[in-house]
Image 1 (tube, rainbow, N blue to C red):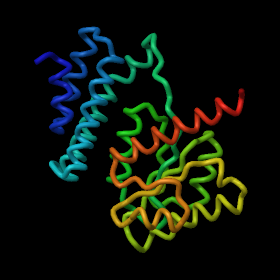
Image 2 (tube, one colour):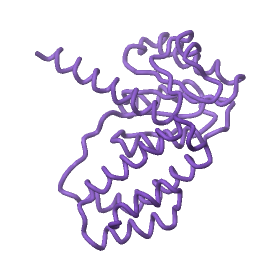
Image 3 (tube, one colour):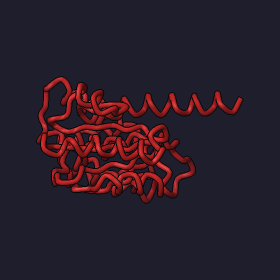
Image 4 (cartoon, rainbow, N blue to C red):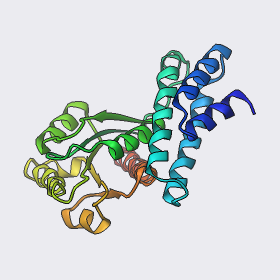
Length: 222
């Protein structure tokens, strides 16, 4: 097993200390970091698929996400110096809605989005509806992601969409919602563009949405 395979395995098994140490070895050996990140991304996709198939559960997913973060912290400075710039798939502003302090699921989604080429701005937890929109306007976001982990805070997701409508900004953003109690039916009811059932699906949905948006922009300029 080569060093990259060992690094991917360490990430998938949630061994963050070993992942960081192997990432340091990768840097010392001068390997192609773009290739390494691609392999890690594939590894995390497989973790997401296993989670979706219920072969692993939330604690294992969290450990893998943490190990991926540790590896990327080591590799990112080298990537920044690299000759090749990764294509940015889109810009996402994401947070947990007002009144809700849960962040675990959101943080896993953030990790998966970042390793798949998205620029992500994390607002944290207990975020007011207007703050989502202000940040999206500030950074020129494509996507607003709102997580709610309690049924009592789910209405705050609707509030973001209603506020976007009032401000004449609804068509500007793809709004995705998620969280344990959130369902596809709820997403449709409040007028969200998508529902991220889990981190892997959230990435796939947003990749497709951003590809369609780029295609639409390209057609509009012809």
